[in-house]
Length: 121
Image (cartoon, rainbow, N blue to C red; front, side):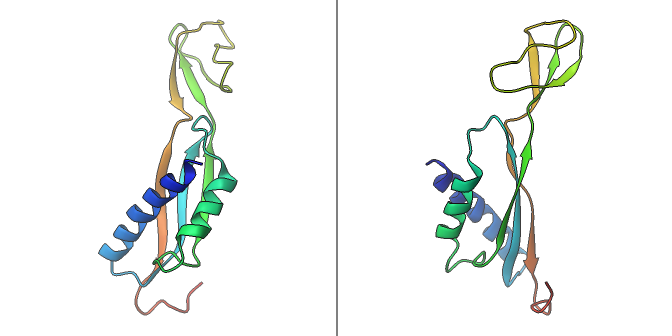
């Protein structure tokens, strides 16, 4: 379960950013995860629940946005969605493709509670 290490890094980056802004707590952490990363959403949520107690993110929500795999054909420049093992251009059946999306793993943004905002949802 490599998600524990991944979530640990996400929490580290998010809490550092929240502290820099003087936040009292983190309400939500939004992450973008490519479909080809082998990351399991349920394992990420389990790791998040296990690692957040006692941190600025305790009680926060982890919002996972999945990003579909998309590639561009080097032969005809068509962009197309695909799975892990079917990276063939649907227009010209070319095999040489550049992956555009599908391997992302990034914190897109966090929502925090700043001093004076404690009662806001």
